[in-house]
Image (cartoon, rainbow, N blue to C red; front, side, top):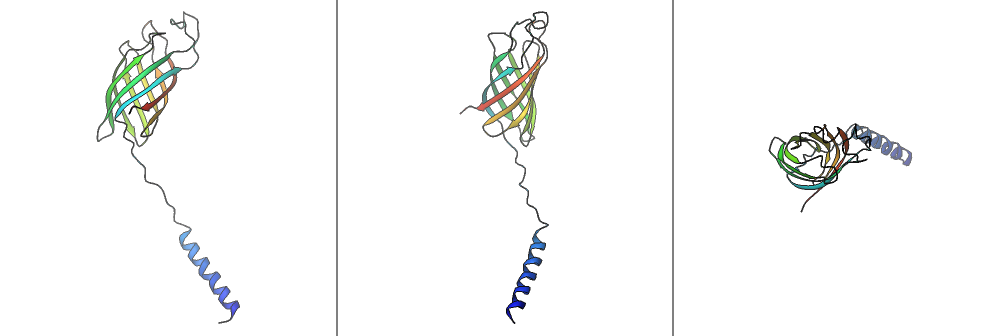
Length: 155
């Protein structure tokens, strides 16, 4: 076989092989994150009105230190307890946790002791929880508000 024929044959074989493999795609398997354990973090609200008729705290922002103790069962349902400290505004007390996680997306509800329902949503890794929170009004104590919620797993 002459050189020109060999080049044509190699090109033909290369074309056939590349067309056979070009339709395949690889996708990584979805990984379920386990967030059981103790998490330390904080809430930081969006800017709030300082009009005390709207916001009885008078604070421009509500910030709180939060400890979440979470148990995740085999169906990825979450239970536990939240301890919340916000001495400046005294909007939160903490309370029981319920929720769920699907792969790395979590939703947690805290039944706060001062009457506010707090919902956390976001993304989880084995060492961080990052997302947002939304709190309903806590009676006459605090206005409804939203903000950032970020946590690191305690070691």
